[in-house]
Image 1 (tube, helix red, strand yellow):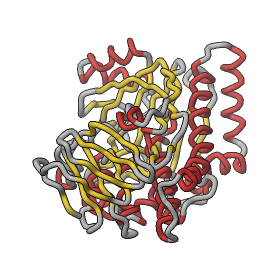
Image 2 (cartoon, rainbow, N blue to C red):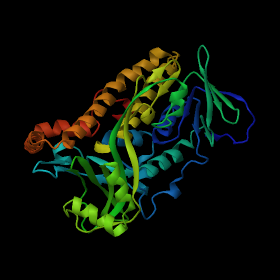
Image 3 (cartoon, rainbow, N blue to C red):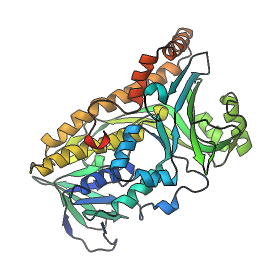
Image 4 (cartoon, rainbow, N blue to C red):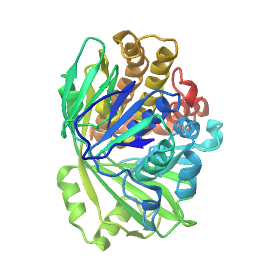
Length: 418
């Protein structure tokens, strides 16, 4: 991999693909394309890529993802899973979900699903740093760090990206992986459907009195899901990552608590299931907004990850959906590139959109439905959801179908994920 100096003079650089946004999804996509021999530019506003030696410190970073076995296969295909595992990943074999307003509860296990694990809780920084270490070995990948985008221009068979320092990058395909508020998506003129979830997520890391037992737990409290996601730090399995999606007023209150008061609030809300709770980091909050682009592609242009869709963290599927976008887009683009077809054409890119839009739409709709169902205090709905959860808990075949969906085994998977 080569790295362009920040002070380089304005120039025109032709590439097979230019990716804007070097987060987990953008970097994974860059690796998938460059390892096949495509000339790839990876553009990122941050000045330096995150390195492995900077992550997996004593206290885990607050932003984590529940990576499915399908995402694990993709990261193994990319050659990064071993370094992630060496840094810190925490497998979970069980899930418990319950309604704090009733008796409804459901339990899932890897044994019932027929898998070794249901997934892994991994700090986003660990995944990204491992991807950075891997892609820097690829000779056809060029990074442009500390580079903002000033303009996006279109020609007959390509796109031109103009950076803020005047450099120009030219490619038959430009890909926006620059997050939920994608500036590149806006430059391309692609509209989004946006809906506030009327909640904010509060995230932090805690140490519990009791072991997490390889179990991801989630309680619905007054319609607000509170998740205790297992983390193991240097052999200590009493850590958890907290994600509490709640009202803005409550979120603000939680982030202003002392550590002692926050621990007490979390322990009380969770019914003392893991004993005394001690926060080991400050609490952070951010608004929850679901977004879905009206289209994923245009001639010589595509959206992936949060630039195409952002989702409520209720099921922890955001990173998995984005990584699947990357895998499917790479499969379609590389196949066209290999056979000499125009890989940036609308015909090629539309295949990617057809394969991903339904799955993403279904997950967005499901999360919205869950929020409405568990957010209702109507006695009939409260009774129905509690009976439904308890009833499903007794139906192992139905639970297997649900778990198969939750572990990412949906639709036609790309070869890199099988």
